[in-house]
Image (tube, rainbow, N blue to C red; front, top):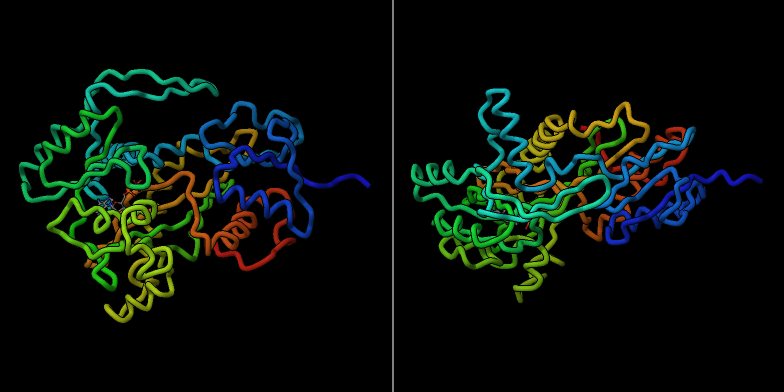
Length: 377
Ligand code: ADP
């Protein structure tokens, strides 16, 4: 009997989500998917390595539908500096005020930094001459409002690495100048909504763009909580101010004291909001999140769209937000290759496959292994 399986290659063993997708496809009861060696050219699905995606080689085999798990060009929102630039450029072009959900931000380059240039599938590192950045605008803004607190974050940073918080803009710019990479210096949200124990948190939401650029928001999200009480007057107390998991785990002996793994899920957050504000997550927070996600992805649609190409793309994104004590939601960053809380992983993976992969290969609706928690927005 002919083998009717679809074929996939897995190139990024470092991604916990796509490692789980690969495992899920291989063990699914309908046996519709088979893994082939990473260098195979005959495949339907590439679970690619984000930094080495061979777009130019996709869609070359006649009659073979191919899909890859990243949209080309998604870095326009998935690096902190490019997110700021993309949103500013859009607002300038449309003569709009900057979106009120984006903390005031400035992109700062050190006098000479290193730039990774991708030509075809090769990557080169080259010294970039100093170029004009937004330090003058930042200084003017800081002069107008001298009491504002700022946070400096490396554009490609993760896990809280190299972040500094200060009301002394000069010292932050000096710090950036001593580094070799681009930074975003952003207004610090100094009145965050605080959980029990007076603790700060951020929210990670998963967003999926399918091959037709339909946008879905995952029904569950996770709050990453601080282990220590928020201390507005001690900006160097990192575990009170930065809610990154890795940092909390490494630096705080209270990690896990309030929530297992410093993770709170939506049902508990909803109860907290109901008790404290008499309004739930669905009414107070999620409409703001949906609107921010749709606006961001609407702005970059023409830059990412692969309509007309010979292959399809989809992408899972991680949107990180903060909420202030007026229940206003702020966008912090967009992750192009997000990890997922362990508790949600298997259901996220199943929902992702059903939403972004099955419709391209299996008549829609034929296979459904569980509730699909991606809601179109
Ligand atoms: P990274 O990529 O290093 O995780 P983030 O932008 O996620 O950088 O910032 C790390 C943490 O710093 C966030 O989880 C949040 O707790 C805090 N943070 C980031 N930006 C702001 C801001 N503008 N105001 C207040 N806190 C912030």
